[in-house]
Structures are given as structure tokens and as C-alpha cells.
View (cartoon, rainbow, N blue to C red):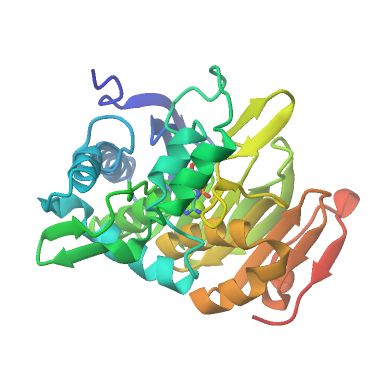
Length: 342
Ligand code: AMP
Ligand code: MG
């Protein structure tokens, strides 16, 4: 049943010219995860990477929104109006409530039913899909699922709204890289980068240079920009280029606007840099929903300092602090609009 409980080691790359960089990739969270570690022995790096791979597999199982998991058990209990305990989900629930309120509800992991009817509770997004009817969307929006409906007392979880169905897809990978970096530090690794399908966190440096990170172009193939990070920072992008549904030539993004129940429109990608991966991930999703109208206000409310947005025409919007950090290829510089400071 659980076909993904194994870890699929795809590639082990040891750099020929620099013996201090160790890189490994594996498949988890429905995506390719890459880890690079600098400055420790090969054995230590390999042990650390195996530990993280196992941790990620556990998180993937615990947080899975549509295969049987502690989360699907909790969702069933909520639908049945029962009180439930799920210790592995408490940190996610607490963080979700916080980001929900900071984002004026644009980041809303309680909208699992909407995410499901738009066909995103599936591993195969190319399978047959028909958009939900306007009536169905209206019905689910009217249930007004909110993180404020969730109540936590000790380890007891309950919901005052049976329409709540939790889906942590918008920030689980960002939080996972936070936990993984913490674990790497405990294991004595000071310089590393973890990339969970474009959700990336780095610590330290690559030798005497900062880690250089490529931000993907929303067209899916090219690199849009590069940014250097050192110290401890997460670079996280949300976009409609990776997970989307198509019906009769129309593309539907996997990011849903909780206010109208429809896929968010207007922005092709949003990148946020912050120390916390969970915050950067929650914010990148919330700002995609906020759109060009509201992103600045929501970013301020969430305490985010570096934002880059790309609209559907390819125009890039950045706050001044972000503008100082991102580098675009000289021959492919997009039109860039710099906002007021955050
Ligand atoms: P991300 O790629 O981080 O933007 O996360 C997108 C995923 O978050 C989707 O595949 C859904 O599972 C979930 N999601 C979609 N819309 C929202 C929303 N408004 N708030 C919270 N989670 C969402
Ligand atoms: Mg996100």
C-alpha cells in the first residue's frame, strides 16, 4: 500500500576536483531532494544525509494529505466532530495558525476540501480532470474553513467546523528543511544546502564562497536569477509551473484563493528569502494569492524582508533589499519594477 515508504537513492555524486563537497539526491515528498555538504569527511556527510533522508521519509508519511497518515486520521476525526491526538502534527498546526493570522487567511491550510476538488490530492496531475462546478466551489467556500476553527488543548485537537480539512502542502517542505538543517547542525555539519524541490535552505558557506542559488524561471526550464546566501537562509519559490491541472487548454494553478475557492491568477512565481524555511514557504504561497495588489501589505504583516514576484507577462517585481541581492543574466535581463521598501 505504502509504495513510497522506501527511499530511492537516485544519484551519488562526489566531486572530482573538490574533495570537501559531498552531494546526494533522493526522492521524497513527491519531489527530488538534493543535499550538499561541505567541510566534513565523506563518511560523516554520508551518515548525515542518510539520517536526513530517513527523517524526511517519516515527515512525508506523517503529513501526507491523501494517503493514509496521521493527518488523514485527524481529518477524518474533524469531519466526524471528534477530539483527536496527533503529536506529530502539533508543531505544524501551531505554526499554521500563526501564519494564517499573519496573512489575513490567504495562507489557509484548512482548505483541504477545495484543494481536493481541484484535483491536487493526486500524484499524477496528468490524469483525467474536470474542474469542479461553480456550485461545488460556492458550497465549499461557504463552509468558511479557517485555522481559527482548530483548537489545541495540551495534545488534544478539535475543530468547531467540520468543513475543515487540513493540508500542509504550502509549507511542509519549508518546515522540513528547517528541521533538517537543525539536525545537520546537531550532527556537526556547519556548511550545507538542502534543496527540497525548489524549497531550499543553506547554512555556512561553500569553502570561502557563499552558496550561490539559482531561482527558476516560471517557464520551467531556464534560470531566472541567482542569489548568494551565507549564514542561515531559506530561498523558497511558489509557482504554477510545477503543479497544475489542465482542462480544455486552460491551466489551473495548485494555489487556491480561499476567498473565492478558485486557483490564484496573475503571478507565475513568487520567491521569498527568510531565515525560517517555514515562514518563507508559507509567505510565498500567501503572496501568490495576494497578487500584485496586496503582496506588499501581506509581506509586511508576515515580517518578510526579501521578495521577488514574476507576473504572467514575465515582469519582475522586487523590494529594494531584494533588488540588491538578485543577479540576472546579462543577456536575459527581464523588465524589473522595484517596489517601496518592505
Ligand atoms: P506551495 O508550492 O508552497 O505554494 O504550496 C502549494 C500547495 O499548498 C498546494 O499544492 C496545496 O496543497 C496547498 N495550498 C493551495 N492553496 C493554499 C492556500 N491558499 N493556503 C494554504 N495552502 C494552500
Ligand atoms: Mg509555500
